[in-house]
Image: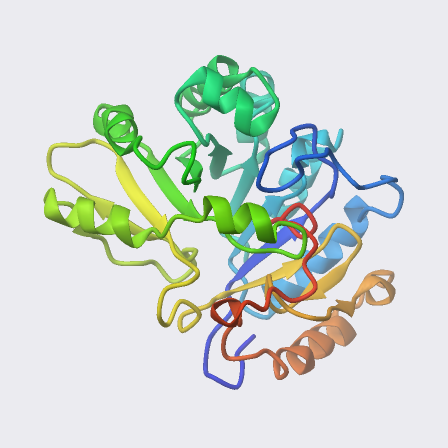
Amino acid sequence: MLIDAYQRRFTYLRLSVTESCNFRCTYCLPDGTDCDSRAGELTLPEIRRLVTAFARLGTRKVRITGGEPSLRKDLTEIIATCKAVPGIEKVALTTNGYRLQRDAAAWQAAGLDAVNVSVDSLDAATFHLVTGQDKLADILAGVATAKAVGIKQVKINTVLLKQHNALALPDFLSFVKQQDLSLRFIELMRTNDNLSFYQRQHLSGASIQQQLETQGWQLLPKGISDGPALEYAHPHYQGRIGLIMPYSKDFCADCNRLRVSSKGQLYLCLFTDSYQDLRSLLQSEHSAPLERFLQQALAGKAQSHQLQQQHSGSTRHLAQIGG
């Protein structure tokens, strides 16, 4: 099993398949992608070998991320490859939704169980301002399509931005009132290229949490392979509200996820100073050497990130390893 020195069990792999993205979100890639080449991205056989090794060590959930993963022409095959690995129970995808309406049915048929879609505002003009794309209506249509074709779990990701959506909680609550989906507010995180933006835009999720609890929302229990969100439900709402608050006390105490980049680099934390290159170990069908490497590497995982100490590690931006 993958268990670290603090007795945390790792059952969740976040696998980036590309650093490229076609959006220009203000909090991530305001100047567009800095990925100068798509060369060197993990191939399908390498992905299968990687996921197989993780599954043999107890990983049960794989989330495919980017950049924007739908820029990979073989994304449907990547989904099917991950789902076919013995031991993998859940395959999820995080996307900006650009191709969701077109491809949701194919992804579901390939085995996709869950999809998270980035929607930082329900106001079209604000959405355009934040993302650089005037596509809100298309993306919300894609969310509806994902539900209609039978993807089991559909979630909305909303990055909290003080100047853009700090006062929009009533709009988001209205959105989930009649929709069976989860909308998660994510605190803006500092990376190496966004300090001034972070200082202007950071909004604590604690203010949202207090409003929810005052209005009767109840915290739900977490599953073993769930991510870091605290998810709330209300008897008068079909949908749920989640909060991801990386600056909160003990945020890392129940960490259960590891990250691998689109170039085959293992990151023990989103905000680590270093990574381990797995590429050479992905050239063989024999997974034992990779399994041993992963177990040994995990011994070096720190107890917590150091965001509270203003240390963001070597992460350039969230598209680098999928957030």
